[in-house]
Image 1 (cartoon, rainbow, N blue to C red):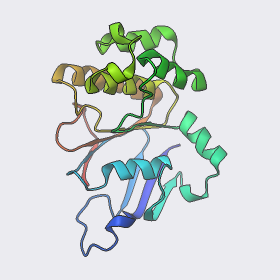
Image 2 (tube, helix red, strand yellow):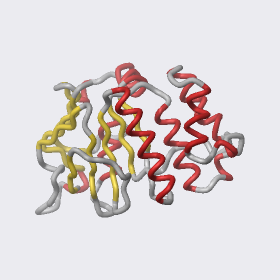
Image 3 (cartoon, rainbow, N blue to C red):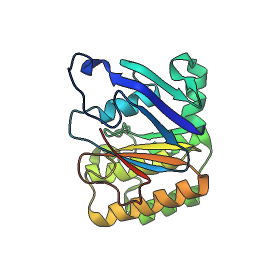
Image 4 (cartoon, rainbow, N blue to C red):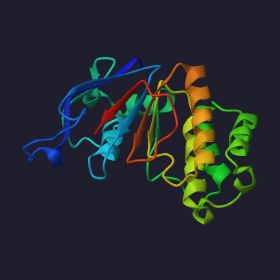
Length: 214
């Protein structure tokens, strides 16, 4: 996948509003592979909804979203499965981890589907993020910051052309935020991928190609 394009896209819940001031909603925006984007937003402006629209998780929007020129509404279930396995990775704000499983079990579930990352690579990411000693701990007993780091590693355990990260450091200190940014830069550089990061204030310290206001 080379491009993700939004054409006059707007959440249906915003449709009754007289004026929506945004660089994204009701405009034509193209995310290009190989570039890094920051979506700055206030709470309630639809950043998590946008991620869900692009991931195919929700369809309650107006306008058109296309991948390489093809309307995503036309994709079959099988095509969505393949896209989420090989082309599109998503780190949701709510993380969607399995609380009854350990950190490493959550990661291995994803990696078992894609067979992308080696055990050595996963262990290295966990070590750099300071949670290698927590990998056997149940996620439900981990702090939100630790869970964010687990979810981040899980999101890396697949090939992707684009990775979306919805408020990925809301519970991280500056040190761990920097480590996450470094790992992300390394991975998108290796893969030639694009990245879209959302933020309501604190954001990953990256060199963004474009900053958009949602």
